[in-house]
Length: 394
Image (tube, rainbow, N blue to C red):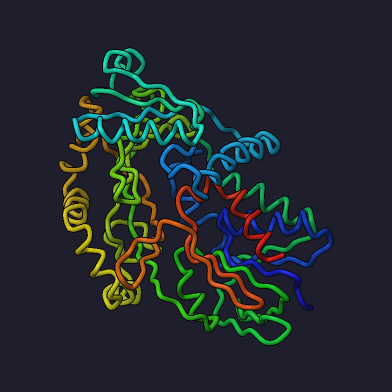
């Protein structure tokens, strides 16, 4: 059998792509290959569960457009599939003069992106969020929360209902492109397809190399470490509480996140991971470490961001530093409030010159499309991203 499309990767971008290919090509033979024994086991299943509104991105940019479309599309998909979600809003809190200046620039960017928001002074912030302290804040009412694993499960059902197939436990070990097909060896079985789409996240550079494509980037894993607050603090905030981000870095800072199950998490930080898929603290994978340490771009990245690198490493090693970041805007928290919670790992594409890739990175051949970087917030934007990939493939 020759499939029309094989998609590698059972995260939200791969599933969205397969679902939309099935919608556009009725009767097409579609196969999703996922190496784990379930869907959304890596980046999709280890994020904050936020439906972002698109406040951060350059006006008129592709990311801003995709996020706005994705916010609406995600909420509509959840409503259509009876997936619980909540539009609780996000409050971005400025705690210093520098952050107030960045907040004002962020306000102008949000207005240009047509994102609804309000300015709050310190008194109004305290009235709305009594446990939160800051000099000023922005409130974004359209931000929501959801469990993206449930979104992926619904996408998987849609793919199967359209006649597609999903193979779990199918680790890809070889990819060979010929004139009229691509052969993929996964789980000891060889599959043939007319078009291959690889949405393999943390392994995207390796899959591209396996397919014979020339790459000039490497995936560097950044651990996002979280804590969960005790149940007695589930009402500590009414909205999501975020710091004002540093625009030179691709991370949003440590925030207080209300989860769809009613709990509240704190995090994430962004510290170099020693294993691409090692979620327990101090996880170590020698191959992953070698890939990172032998890549010149990694060392150049360190020279670009030395202060941030040292700060994140210190806060990972010592809970006091992590807590201090939280107490800037939530001074009531104590070290005892920071309970264990699973970490996430972000696949950060880095170029040979040390540049952190903030935009999409695709590698293509006549019969293959490899998604080597799908920028944050890829979960929120997954439905329009899948549509964009389907457009490119078709």
